[in-house]
Amino acid sequence: MRRADAIVVGSGPNGLAGAVTLARAGLVVDVVEGSDTPGGGCRTQELTLPGFHHDVCSTVHPLLAASPFFARVDLSAGGVKVLTPRVAFAHPLDGGVAAAVTGTVAETAAALGRDAPAYLRTFAPLVRHADGILPNFLAPLRSIPSDPLATAMFGIKGLSSAERLASRFDTEEARAIVAGAAAHSMLPFTAPLSAAFGLLFTMLGHALGWPVVEGGSARVVDALAAELESLDGRIITGQWVRKLHDLPPARVTLLDVTPRQLIGLAGDRLSIRYRRGLEHFRYGPGVCKVDWALDGPVPWQAEQCREAVTVHVGGTFAEVARGEADVSAGHHPEHPFCLVTQPCVIDPTRAPAGKHTLWAYCHVPNGSDVDMRERIEAQIERFAPGFRDLILAQATTTARGAEAHNPSYVGGDIGAGAATLRQTVFRPTMQWNPYRTGIEGVYLCSASTPPGGGVHGMCGDGAARAALHDLGWGGHNTKDHAESARP
Image (tube, rainbow, N blue to C red; front, side):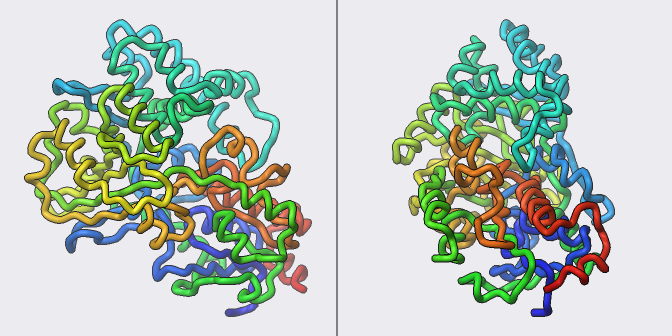
């Protein structure tokens, strides 16, 4: 390694966001990645057959569109083309019908019959004030909201449970919208804050859509890597870091890892109090993910599902709630909630002509090694008869396999920590600045810090800004300043 001002361990979106923020300030930055390719959960690979390009984890990016960090990144200059489907997400029900979030709140409400007024009352104010709510939701540090009234309005509604949010509605269609969006929390529907996910992701669907990146999510990583390299930064792959002392000296070290890996990296360099806090950090359920190469599009019975990249499969609100409660209790649901993603609906470049890629995951107890493929396929077949006849090849990754592939997915938890109320307010431990580790110059920048999981880069950006503040960087943005600050 050269003598860098800053070293970032891990090249997921947060690690790269932190690296870019530091490099823009004039630091010479090296990123060290254990895998052969950068990107973490934001990679695209041929997982089934040649010519079928599958996203390893993240595909749909509503938080990318909302992110203050990515608002400062010229993704188009890096070759990133964002595609937004007309239907943000759909949720099929028995009988060939489906609920769907499309376009404006009024348009979606109009399809909900007697629940139209309640849907308008619930979501229209949030979407109207989305510009004031989203920056606070994605804020890297605890701060005074820029729009306190709008933020309070969201908070009052979001602190409750998904069960209570769904009680506003009578129709299965409206309740299904809540179920699918709230299930992203990986919490039981009786848990506080589970409503916030239902509100947030539905609000995003109306305000910004649920976009995908043409060619695969790896294009986002490619754009960040290109900017970093243009600022004299480097990404070194295939080099696992086992201990902090394996790294060369640097003024700043950012760690895109979860608390468990931080304990292993730092050992007795952590204070007893901070280490105990990390040891009490809770991980959420894991996921079992299946990727398919298909001979054509999924034959959904409901037309709305054929237009959506994201389809929430699990039946009624009560069925989804039961499945998520089973997972929370440590069981594998017989009829799981499945998050299904079909990017070829809007991006045909991901598969050979006429073919499709598809992936789906269901929630499972943390650390599970159970292959849920048959149960997932049965749920899709339930709402898309003939689906199994289209399968050309498939690849399954259990929760335990996900951790083996990416150590930050502890027990298969792709969110890097349970989204409980406590861990939303204090993540990863109870301290004001969540990025500082107590070791001088070492900061945590993973999704285990605020604002949590998703491809938004704000955890890395927040950690980098904390580091620059501690260096006394101020408004400087020159290499000369970086050189003068070297030890």
